[in-house]
Length: 424
Image 1: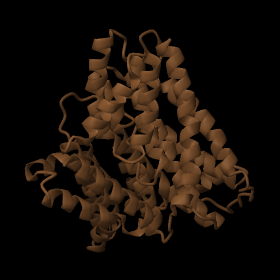
Image 2 (image 1 turned 45 degrees about the horizontal axis):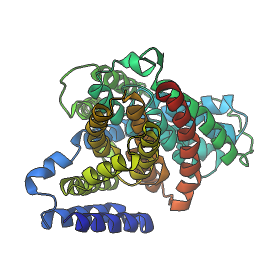
Image 3 (image 1 turned 90 degrees about the vertical axis):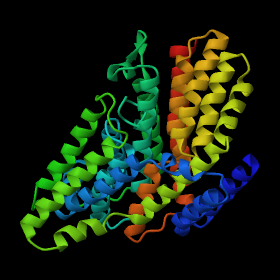
């Protein structure tokens, strides 16, 4: 059944890349095939679905709808436009801003928070928001590996190695993962400047700043950031803790909005802004990945990587980094990282080596690899979903033009740095 699972999965991904408008239906249809054929047993369906991510996306989308209605994104857009000279620097500023936020908040939540600001800037400039949103998504994915709380994969690795928050900054007497990511961020920012080099249109200065009509949605968003960071330090918390935080704050926002406006639309309008197609796509992908994991595809891929490395630590490190980039471009990095962490521990025991460089190589490759394709990371899917709701079609070429050079610019410095710092 393993070859059948690989074939079905591969065909589905090709179809999703070719027919981008129908990705949710292709993913859900493929998931149904895995279930009907028994490749994903009924008792494993619930385990395959990451409800924490789905709830977090839904809750954040609703809060962001209230945030947009308050006109705060317009004010932030005005403030950014006052500080940058042209469109190129506006795009770079937004990407860097998203990266800073994403180092402490989940990538998807970051995209949902920053995208409305970028959309407002593009409306004022009368330019396409497609490259802006793509740059925001890939930048948020990059910084997700910078801290313990930046991404699910970082949380998983930190838990496996019993790392504290500060260990990502300084580990075993040397600068840690944070600096590796920031080296990549500097080079990737140069790449973004090159990609946007022709966008030299000056930024028109607003006569007056937009006036915000309600600060409560902004408080809810800031509260969400604080609570998500705080929750990362709580041991043995529920798996859906982040999702409950986002949905709980959305519920509070809806109650407040209803009390303020005293009509049903105060509740229904924000709820309509929850992108069911994006949620449906992720739902289908979770089930698809659960199916191939159940059939041993991920285990087989991890085993192949180990054999390719042999007994040479540098070769093994190189294989893990670049294979992780390739694999994570097409499948969710969470089950892959979950499989590779114990495998690396076993390799370290057999070879009697310090596995730190292998673990960090895994984290950097698996986190950044998702930037290569439109469906390689949840943040990418979310960003494209936002653009679709605004009436914009994102071609694969649009994404590859930014995502691939950005990935190479980010991963190569990290690859070199990690080996020098922990491999030699």
